[in-house]
Image 1 (cartoon, one colour):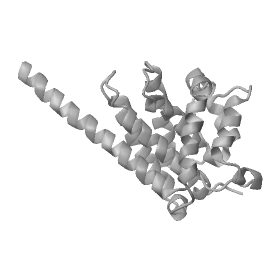
Image 2 (spheres, rainbow, N blue to C red; image 1 turned 180 degrees about the vertical axis):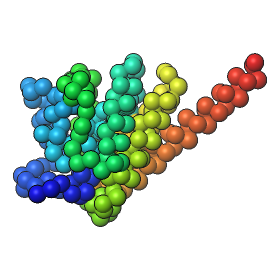
Image 3 (cartoon, helix red, strand yellow; image 1 turned 90 degrees about the horizontal axis):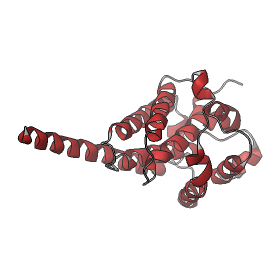
Image 4 (cartoon, helix red, strand yellow; image 1 turned 90 degrees about the vertical axis):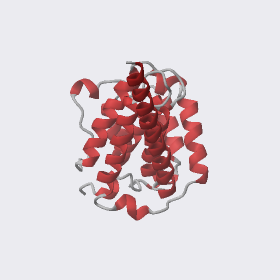
Length: 216
């Protein structure tokens, strides 16, 4: 059966066992397995949820209130590429071979595992399928992809070492999680947080530019 927009947007999985298992449990088990965790393996592991899960993991790095160095910009760039594929309606992830072989890295699969899973479980406890139709409309993946592009780009353009990339990155994480959980309230929370982050970045950027013009 061909993939549908519902599957692309992170609809219910075909396996009854997987549908009953919380996403956080599936993610924790996969992250703790010994198998290689490359970007190219995400289609095989998470099937119709691969776009959302991959973007969630990538954007969790800049969303952490920790110095991540240049690796966060690499992950943001890949997230933009994946979200652009959602925008144009691709059904499976495409990446250049070099990126397909790229490991998600110790930041995600090592030290951050408990933090990521713990935060996802906090959302899961209050989440249930709401506004499911929104995620299953034919235009759903395109709209969500556009939102994710905006948040990933904003996080990448935030001033270095300012911590301002955290809010748009967290917004992207919540939007990706809303696709997986099919919960419009989680989506709204992500849009508010990510949008607020963009406003903050623009406001501070304009103020800084004005200050620099006065100095010059």
